[in-house]
Structure formats: structure tokens, C-alpha cells
Image 1 (cartoon, rainbow, N blue to C red):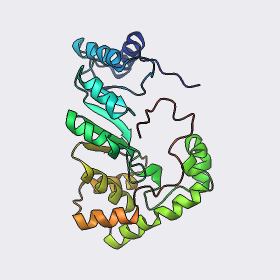
Image 2: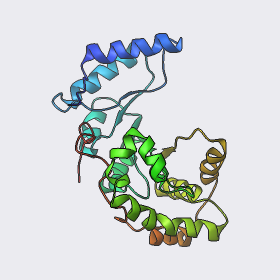
Image 3: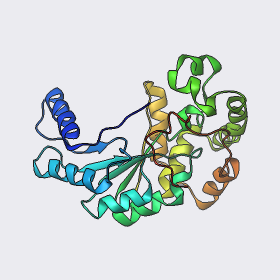
Length: 239
């Protein structure tokens, strides 16, 4: 079973290791990447705040937490960022997390903003899925959901082609338009893909264009859960 340790001893020790590896005395942002459910978030936030006071990090962040957890943490110390999966295929943050980030002045760092490549012009093939330890067991990339998701995401690719851009750029532009607090963090090793993703940050979508995107991929279009039960250990479900 997966286990997470948010104790003061563990967090400071891991941060110290990072400082040594990086060759610096302070980092800009230090995350608790998964919350230890049994430990009060106020205790964890106090631990992180102490690291700020010691000059080891300038700001603190949380990952995959519920809106209520952010609210409780922010009452102890400002939370600079919350990392959460958010995209056209994962809309749960709109049910409270986006709003709480806006209230707290917290950046919502949206990972997997192109749905692990489902929201691109080159969605994963069966071979690519099989080669990935994560995707090979993920519900959205196993049958019958995988074939259904390839078909269901096709309208976005068609819309992008009509607009003279890429599906990835549209997905990024849509996400940025949802809230000024959202900062997408796509990942790629391919320079051409990086250019497509970056192009989305330069696009300004009209209300009509946003409506067309959401009509192409309406809320709830994705087949299958975003995590397996084992992968759900750590992230907080709040809706």
C-alpha cells in the first residue's frame, strides 16, 4: 500500500537533500506532493511555514487536495500553489478548487492539461500505452474505455484543424481562459510538441470559440476514472 509521510522530520530532511543536490540554500516553492490523511493539515502547514522562516523555501504548496483542505491550510500560512490535474477531460477542480484558489490568491498548477495526450493531434496508440507503466493500468487507457476516449476526443481534433491550430494548443488556451489563477504545466520531450503547447498560451479565445470547444468535449465526456483505486491513495476526493 502507498504511504505518505508529512512529518516535520521527513519533510525537512527531504528538502535538505534537494538543496544539496541543487547546490542552493533556498528553493522558490516546496510542495507536499501528497497529503498524509491522518495528520492534521494545520500541523503540516506549520511544518512548512517553519521551513519558510528558516529560509529554506520562499513559498509552500500542496498537491491534489480538497478545497476545504486548502482553506484550512491557508488559515495557518499562505499557500502559494496547489497542483491538481485539470483539463478538458478532468473537470473536477471546477467544483470548488478553482474557486477556493481564487479566494486564497493561490495558483492552481494544472498538471496533465492535455489529458495525457488524449487532447492532442497524436493521441496515444496501443503500443504507447503498453509501454507506459502508468497508462497501461489506468482506467481511461484500458479497454473498452481507451477506444471510446479516442473516438470521443476526435471532435476537438476536428475543431482544431478547422481553426488552423493544434488540439493541444486549443486545450491549453481553454484551460488558461477558465481562470486567471490557472497555470498549466504540460510535459513533453518533443520540441515540436512543446511549440504546440506554448502556442496555446498565446491564444485568446472568444466566448464563441470557448463554447464550441465545450460543445465538442462537454463535461463528462471521458470514459473511465482518472485513477485506479491504488492510484487514488493520496489524492483527496471532494466531489
